[in-house]
Image (cartoon, rainbow, N blue to C red; front, side, top):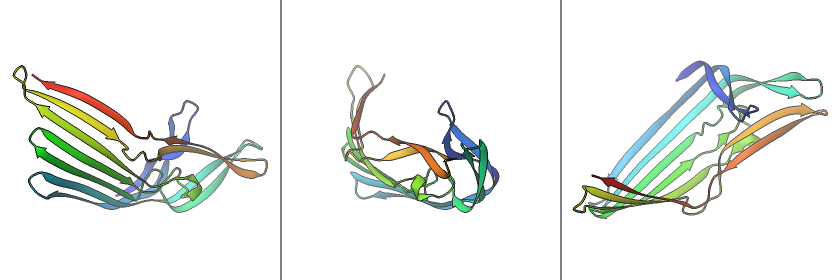
Length: 199
């Protein structure tokens, strides 16, 4: 899909923490998505999806604040990756249902490298990450209601350390380019539980 004046994230945030966006004259997103479902046997099912894409800006002008004289320095970039647009995304869900009442799911997610701004700089990028979670569901059918479902979700079960978002501000001061940036580390292993009643 080709875009004219696509509104894209710059990687910067404003004075209240909202993401700053800008129009880029010409850009495109192209890719393929594949999904599959494997019924391994009557109790085991494996669902997968994979997205491969190219997300490019034909030409992008970066404006860098010059703290020495309060002007802006324009820097042209050509054929760079769009910010926060990983080339690879993959998901997997392995579901084991030993009985009608019990389901165990292993949920895996891979997100490829992302750039924080539109300059395709390795210094301003997010590393790929791979996270696994477990979902356990147990359902009973008592006499006083139609169904009670008990759910337990264990997120990031391997306690992987990663960042899924960031911001960056590039500026010029005292004769050199400098950067202010911040990264958003995600929670390690964490839990969520719930009970749902159907009357």
